[in-house]
Image (cartoon, rainbow, N blue to C red):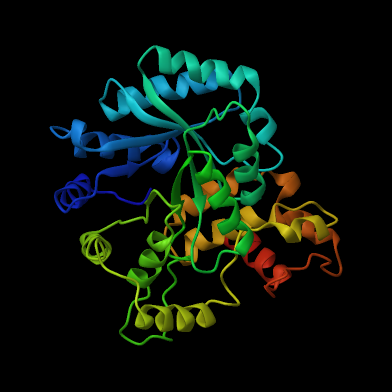
Length: 322
């Protein structure tokens, strides 16, 4: 999602990374091209996942065909329907969606099918677990040490039915803070996610060699009491910044603003340091659910159960992404 240099990916593969996650829309399509260059000569050694828009069956097919060209490969290991939430899970689970994915699998263009979810995640995970057909093979879900208990429980239910759980957003925003001095919380955060036996793999974004070296160093390492203390300090430092993406606040917003996605855009900007990703995510919202709606409210009625100042967040987003 953030890696601009294919040589960084190659170095990660040399260090034992064997799963790469990309998407049609990352870097406006450029990210798949970079992944394609990195996979040259080692395609059979790396499990390749990308994502498709699921606006319609035709869009899914078109995205897969484009991805195959951009990635310079004959097949995709797992194709994921991008960003499924409570409002869209019915379409993701619909018969016509399944049929087009079955067709792509029968043609040998994809091996497995999955979903990704950022908002109302527990609801999506529970729907997958309850699916009598058990159609989807994987789910990529935001999961870290600040995730609410409901996410952990839903992950366990999905894993019990055979779904491969891919943990994303493992670094809880990746914010730079002064709370830890020279210490980094990122190895501890990654170890925490991998500690969960229901997690099949983790996909922290690694955009440069420093991140590759830091993250790959945790392979085989145990989660320690020192790691727990580091995460506690980091957690306190980002308490008023980090959005858990639970979307509980959206039910209290009379303007139906997509608060969770707005906050995710801010996280990409302030934590990940990617203005391009932040803006492309923000553009997905649509004006009718953007912070521009907030202008009509003299008092913000939306409430965050974790204490985030939603009005301040929305005002900041409106300024940053105007």
